[in-house]
Length: 376
Image 1 (cartoon, rainbow, N blue to C red):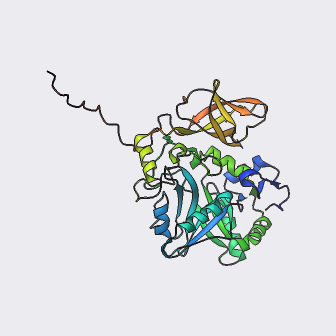
Image 2 (cartoon, rainbow, N blue to C red):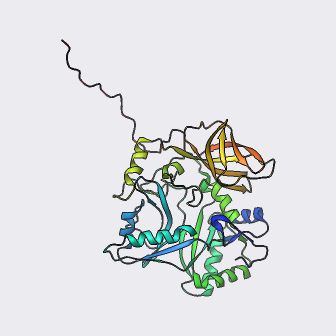
Image 3 (tube, helix red, strand yellow):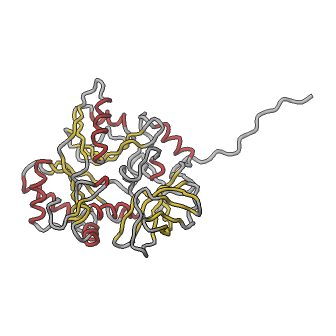
């Protein structure tokens, strides 16, 4: 939708679509109310077909998807042998094929990895020509209804599937590290509408003709940051464990069968104490400048973490997600490296400083000393 009046092209992991259309705060309010749609067609989609597809994905990933019903949504991670995050994907199956939505830069590596793991099973992997629209399903949910209406007008099969983000719920087999009663992610639940690539221009044209508001990725990201929702292209680096990001809520099943990285996931959950933790930072906005993703976060004279995502929220003001050393006290003021000097920041705890998830096994009592050989 870059041909829409006022469109400003996004950069970084969202390059290729609009960051905003001239009024980011208005777009964000419309999106939060469920009235606007966001062009996320830069995201990559991988299709998996064959009768063994769901059982096969179950054995490779962190999530139980073997018995996933057509139209049901799930989220999964692919981990390395130590339990660190390598890929994440939103997954929905239509009864014939499974569609995996991931970051643009990860689509080809994900497809390549999956293709190498097929062995003798009835499975085929290929990139899919699918475009993605994002909506918030709270409020009026007019955006979702408008897309469905436009897709129906274009013709049968234009709207391929809808993936409903399970965040911030705790899915069967999952657990939570953010032990809050009212999770902020519940304020603006989201969905991804998967549209046949060849029909996307017609769908977009009908949406605009019907007067459906459009929002850019700045609005989408602001709601994600405010909802503490981790993203592969932002919060994840080569050391990331899902526990550090509270990702066991929606993307990990603790009781399923073996998969690569399972031992690392179980060990960190059972013993606690992942080395880092996700926080949301409320930034001092007095100088009207925001830090960039990757900016250092300091406590006193010591760098204790890095900013992973930054946004201006229509109600909260300037906020950021950051990954800190777990040992950083939750009640201390922090400083974030900004373009014109340090920016004061206060923490809102996501993952606690103890590193314990809900349901973690209780610590054992004191170990009984071993018997000693009598002396003399």
